[in-house]
Image 1 (tube, one colour):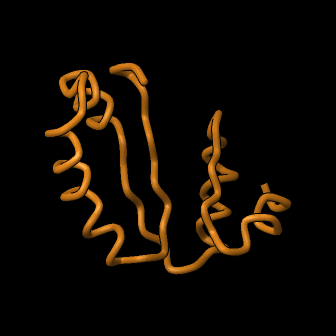
Image 2 (image 1 turned 90 degrees about the horizontal axis):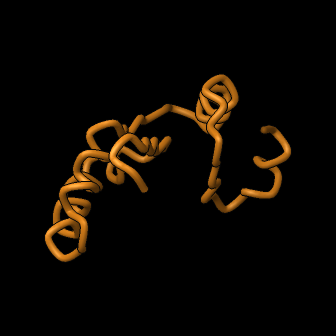
Length: 81
């Protein structure tokens, strides 16, 4: 991770989108290289969608260099990338 790194979480879960910033803040207080991580997180986003189809459309349009699909149906979603 570098200061110009960017992470984007795409989710359909409002509760995850709402809770995650607080969890990240708690974790930052316990990890080394906090300053560099904060700079990287400044470029990062959490985006909530109404459907998995919308998430996959965004992911395909955005075209990330690295993509992690954490979903119960990850195998079939990977085929849609």
